[in-house]
Structures are given as C-alpha cells and as structure tokens.
Amino acid sequence: MTQTSLSPQDRRDARAQLRRRKLVAFLFVAPLLAFLLFAFVAPIASMLVRSVYEPTVADLIPETLQEMQQWDGRQLPPPAVMNQFALDLKRLAQDRTSGRLAGEVNRALPGSSSVIQSTARRVRGVEDDELAQNGASILQEANPRWAEVDIWRSIERTGQAYSIHQFLTALDLQRDPIDGSIQARDGPKIYVDLYTKTLRIALMITLLTIALGYPLSYFLAGLQDKTANLLLVFVLLPFWTSLLVRTTSWIALLQTNGVINSFLIYVGVIREPMRLLYTELATIIAMTHILLPFMILPLYSVMRGIDPSYFRAAMSMGAKPIGAFVRIYLPMSLPGLSAGALLVFIISVGYYITPALVGGTDGQMISNLIAFHMQQSNNWGLAAALGSILLAVILLLYWTYDRFVGTKSLSFG
Image (spheres, rainbow, N blue to C red):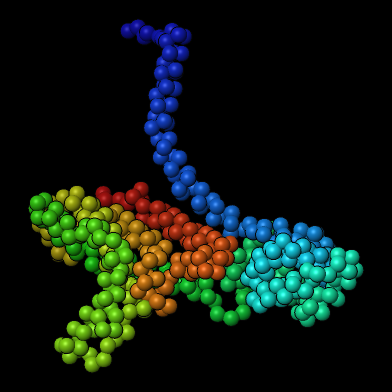
C-alpha cells in the first residue's frame, strides 16, 4: 500500500489555512477577552497595586523625605529635616494642598491633621530664609506636638511610596517604631475578627442552603418533567425581582412591629417584640433566602441525571434506605452539592447590600467595611488591602475545593 505525501506547496497551503482558522477563532473570542481584561483583570490588578503603592506623600514633600533617609527614627529628626519640612509645608499651604498631606498623615497618626493644618497657616507668611534657618523652632512654636517623635515617624512611614503598611493594618499588625519588627497591634483585633465573622456567617448560610436545598432538589428531580419545570419557576422567581426589593421585604418582616413579631404576639408565643432586625440573625436569614436558588439549581441539574435504577438495585440487594442513600445516591450527587456550596459560600463572603440593610452593626461583614473605607474614610489603600486579602481567601477556598472535592478527584465506580 503506497502512502501519498504532500508536496511542499500543499504543506504551505495547509499551514496557511490553519493560521487563518486560528485567526478567525481568535477574532471571535477577542471581544470576550477584551471585556475580561477591562472589567475583571484590570480592576483586580489596580486593586493589588493600590494596596502597596501610595505615592501621595512622596510626591508632596520629596525634599523632606530625602533629608529623612539618614534619620534612625529613635529621636527627633535633625534640624535640617525640620527646616526642610517647614519650607515644604509653606509651599503646600500656598498651593492649597496641605490638606492632602494632613489627611494622609492623619490615617497613620489620628489627630495629626489639625496639627499640620494649623502649622501650615502659621508658616504661610514666614520668609523662606527664616524657615531655612529656624524652621524647627518655628514648627514647635506653632504646635508643641512637633517636639514629639511620633508625628515625624508617621510622616516618614506615609512617605514610603511602596509599603505593606496597609496589609499589616488589615491583619491588625504593626511595625515596631524602633526596630521595625512586625507585632500585633494593641487593642481589639477589628479586621481579623471581622474576617472570622464573615467566614462564619458564610459557612452558616452555606449549611442552611444545603439543609433546605438538598431535599427540595431531590424532590424536584423525582417528578415528571412538566411538574418539575412548573415548580422550578417558583425557585427562579426571586431572580425576577430586584435584590433591593427582596432585601427591603425582609425589613418589613423582621422589624419590631413587623409581620413576624406581630404574628408571634398574636398567637401568644411572645409578649414583647423580639429584636430581629439589624442583627447577625437577620443577615443569615435574608441571605439564605436570596442565595438558596444558587444551591438548588446545581443540585437539581446533577440529580436529574442520576439514574434511579442504581438506588432501586441497592434496595433489591438488601441495602437499607439510609445506607443505600449514603453509599449510592449521595456520592453521585456530590458534584452538584460541592458546586452549589462553593458558589453560595463565595457569593456570601463578598455580599454587601443585604448585610448593610438588614444586618446593622451586628450583622455587617468585611465587604461593608471595605465600602466604608472607599466611600467615607477615602482610605483606598486600606480598602484595596482588605479586598486583596478577601480575594486571596476566596482563591484559597477554590484551590481547596478543586484539590479535594473537584470533579477530577471524584469517583463513582
């Protein structure tokens, strides 16, 4: 049997045709790639950069920071540093940008904003030659806090364009002002406790959606197609209404004179209204209701494809119903269960609107604090660090899922 071989020209034509097909395929997916780069990759990259890069102070007082490079931070800076800072502060006061410096330093040392602002007004009318020679004494006359080393350390720390300071703050850590070692911050662990609380609430919501969604999905999977499709409409019904409407409806149900308290008082279960709204319980209840379809749909799609004859065969061979369910049906439904649990957990970890409206102070999660730093305190660096840590937690959870529960590691044989 002879084997025909392509001529060099035919091979070149084949390669050219393959390149054209690849180019056409790339052009089809190029809009999607551009959208992902613009709406997903670029914001995340910007957040990661913003969490470690803050050049505001470095751009405002570069000469002062240059003089500070030889300062050990143990005692007050030398007079040359203070004199240069006085000159820089006068320039910022004349440019009306001293408020930016005051705001940045105040985040590192609360209370320093008024010190910088009042001193800026004081040095605005002083001659440059006088500031260059006696700037240190002029600063201390304007405010005695310039004789304290803490405010100078704060200026030096915020003057670092690249730093992990925001990540340390997000983990309730700080650097020792003397030797620079990392240590736990004094006082309550605000951010770590809130991360723990967020993960705990997300886990409780996931378990509740499993407890409610698994039996319902099992019931729907055993129905006729027409009946199951009709009932699925009620599962999908929440998607047809606004998230804000669904959340505010829970406010009407859970408030002091709401439906639930009024009903319980009417039937005699309680005598006084319970505090249900603006609590952690309210956040869990409302988010469980909102996220329940994300558990039901993956479960139903998997359960619908499970052949019921496996379960009947196990029963016919003497297996008990519970044993047959645990050993046969549950492992086969595990892909849908794990996918739904991962989806609900990840969504609930980053949820914002529902905890903000029904959770109050007790039911808020880490996403609410991120929004606070972005919208009110304007501390975008800390918000970016908190968001980066949250992203790392979610990626770690996804890796754990893919490593131990992913479909590649499942076996039904």
